[in-house]
Image (cartoon, rainbow, N blue to C red; front, side, top):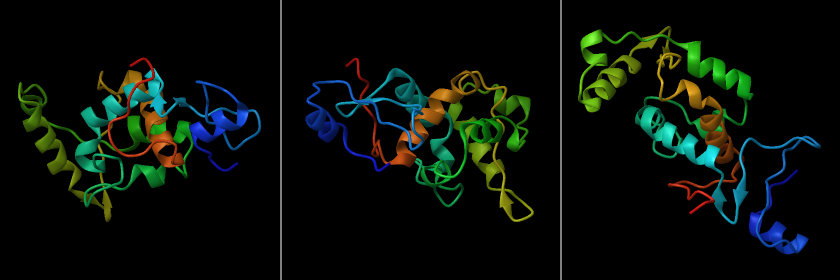
Length: 164
């Protein structure tokens, strides 16, 4: 199914406000909802989580950097279960306890970026986020945001939540 803008669908259907982007599979639903160009609460939380944990390596709009690949492209190819596994357990980076407990989050991000730049067998390594209370409880939110970006349903920049 080709994606059609929410405004066009609303016009075609004679609807006024609510348009949910449908999944490619019949009867299936996307993990995000976009209403008049605004995102649901889960997708917005995903944007917040992404920009608190992932953007340093994967880029501000998830389009990749010299350090880490584009998640916009990767999310076109992997399932939510595979995404969860990769985020939680795929790679292990150990940051010493002094760095992990530093009051300055910039120092922690810099230490993390230095570790990520290391290569194992020609591959970049990524931290596992299973123990991070900012990421682990919000995997489905993070997936919703990145899937909306990957599907082309959400453009770059800070999304506006539906309730605003």
